[in-house]
Image (tube, rainbow, N blue to C red; front, side, top):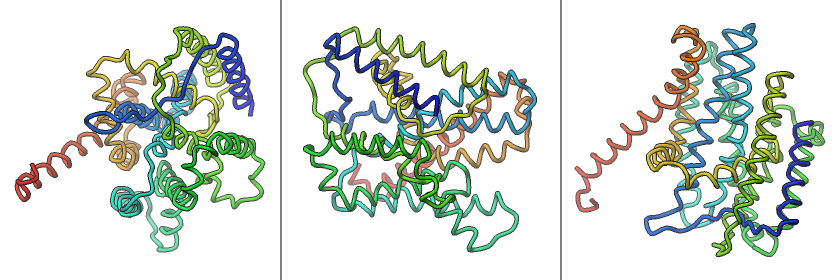
Length: 359
């Protein structure tokens, strides 16, 4: 609660700063490019995917070395720093969402089938006693592996959007809906709905992330603005970065607080911060992170298998805590990414062999 309220206070100061100095700032928008959709959103997804891996690495180190306080507090800091990841995925998933022909076909083929395969295989690998009812419960709640809860959560939002698409896509209601969703999300974060919904549903409750979903839709409705923010926006973002960094160090290093995934203000700040520094990244780094973003489903579904198998090895066995952390991060991002490359190459070869006229 303390971090939530601090974030809201900081956001209030930021809004006051923008208003007082008359600094124009518009939400990032999904610009259509000659070659397709705006790839900066895929870069954002790449950052989010790396962040999700970092969150789980903390649990991995804590499993083996809970008494090594300095290391665990450091991995906790990096984990808390990455708590923007799931909200950022929700935002970017909503930005390009449109109700069109093949809406459910694409969701079934690109999300549900891979998730189902990963859940079945993961269930047999991770657990010793198998029952159909247990698997169905784990499958529907995304409990086969801890990160899998994101899929049932996302499917609920897809259903929500499909039902209320006309209202959600009406720009007349967008600001009002955004405010209402913020209040609902805040109430959920503060626990006001905990006694009203089943305990097993808490982790996949759309009330925890509804503001991020509506914000993504709002960004998707936004248009290109000719007025660009003045340079003072970087002063604001830089100042806030230092404040947030200090607070993260305090909460992680001193109090040992493990943050939730759905705090309201921090993910939005990180979203805007990353958006502003993207043009300053080298093209090579941008392309690498973009590739991770475009193949995030591979990493999301396969990374839990990698980290689960790695629980047979002490992370310090890779060369100590620092090198062990780096190796763990590279393996959990690199192995699924390599599989994604192989699959894509295989698809490309298959299509060129069987459908040469499409090449």
